[in-house]
Amino acid sequence: EKSVLLLYKQRTDKLLARRRQDVIDQNDEVSPFSQESVKQCPHRGRRCAEREGRRTRRRREREKRGAPADHHDGTSTDDELPTQQYQHYQQQLESLAKDSGEVFSDVEDDFNSLEAVLRQFEKWRRTAPQAYTDAYAANNMPKMIEIFLRLDLLLWNPLSEGVEVERQAWYTQLAMYAAPPPASGLTIEQFALDPDKHLLSHAVEKVVLVKLKEVVIAYWDPLSHSQTVRLVNLARHFCTTCPTLRPSSKQLKDLCAAVTHKIRQAIDKDVFIPIFTNTAFESRTSAGSLFFQRQFWVAWKLLSQVLMWHKVLNESTIAELGVKGILNLYLIPALNKAADISLTDGLEKVKYVIQAMPREWTKREIGDGSAHLYLSKLEHFLATTAQKSADIAYANDPKGSSSLHEIRRLLQSIGATRAAEVILHKYLNNGDDST
Image (cartoon, rainbow, N blue to C red; front, side):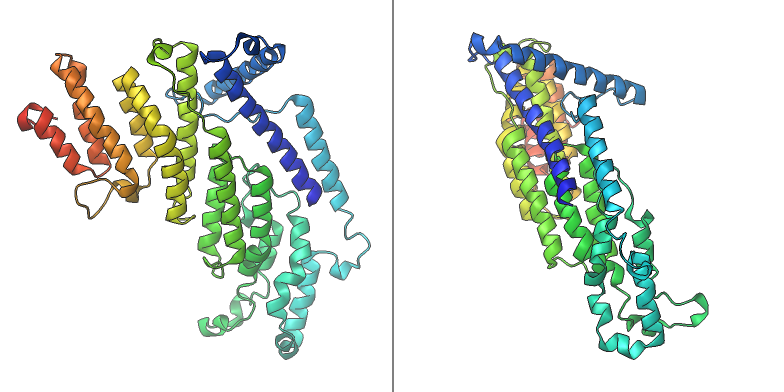
C-alpha cells in the first residue's frame, strides 16, 4: 500500500511542480518587471517548448473528439507524462500487482481469500446461529475481512480509471453474504433483525473510505475535471447508498478534511491572475492578454470544481473556499480588469461564473430582491459595471445600451431583482422594458 501511494504521490508532485513552474515562466515572460537575464535562461526555453508541445497535442486530441468550439485555454488539464516516465510508472505498478498475488500464497485454501472466509462464516451462521450471534460475529466482520478488502483495493484508483465499485468482485460477495434464497419467505421484519444486513455498508465506511482518503491525498488534482467528477460522484454514491454512513462518521469526516486540504493547497499554489496596466492588454493576441485569459479560466475552473462539492462538504466550507477564496479574492478583481479592457468580454466571463453557482444560490424561492449573501460582491460588480455601460451609452455607442440590458439579465439570474429594476428605471429609457 505504501509503495503504491508513494508512486501516486511522486507522479502527482511532478505534474504539479511542472504546472506551477510553467505559470512562473509565463509570468516572467510577460511581466514588465521581469529582468532580461531571467527571460534568457536556457532552461526556460526548453520548458517553454515542452509546454507548447503538450498544449498542441491536447488541442489536436480535442479536435479529434469534436470538442465544443467555445473551449477556453486554461480549462484543460496538463497531466501528460513523458513516455519514458509513464512506462516506468506503469511497470512499477505492474510489479506491485504481481507481488500482491503472493501475499496469501502460504495460507490454507479455506482462508486465503475473501470469498473463502465469507464461506466459512456463512456456514457457521447457518449451522450454529446462536453461537454466531453470541460471538458478535456480525459486529466484528468488517475488521476481520479488512485485510482482504485492502488487498483487493491495492491498485484501485477511481480517479484514474472510473471503475464502478459495484462491478468489483468483493462488492458482490459482501452484498450477497448470508442472502436468503428467493423461496425462503423472509419477511421485512425478519430482515430488519438480521445482524449482517449492513455488512457491505460497514465495509465501505471502515475500509473503502479510508482507502479513498489515501488516494485523495496522494493522487487527486483539484484542477483535474475528470478526477473531480469521479471523486464527487463516488462520494455522493456512498453517502446515498450506505445506510450506516452518517455525517458523524469519522471516516467520512477524514475524507472531507483531506478534500478540503487539497483544495486549499490548489487555491494557494495554483490560482494566479496577473493584473497589469491596460496597455499590456491592448491586443487580444498579445502575450500578456493571452496569459491573463488563461489564468482567469484556470481560476474559474477551480471555482466550478469546488462548487461541485455543494451538499457533500458543508456549505460554510464551500463558501470559504469557493466564494471567499476564489470568487471574491481573484475572479471579481479579474472581472473588473476584463470589463475595463472589453465590456463584452467581461460580461461573457460573468455568465460562466454564474453558471457555475449552485442553483440554490441563484434561484431563491424567497428573497428581498437582493442576491444571495455569497453573491453580494458579484452583484456589486454588476451594479458598478452598469454605470460604466451607461457612460458608454450616453456617448451614443450602441454597445453601452446592449450591455445594460445584458447586465440587467445577469442580475435577475442571480436573484438581484431590485438592482435589476434600478437599471431598468435609471438607464433604460425610463422604464421601457423592450427586452
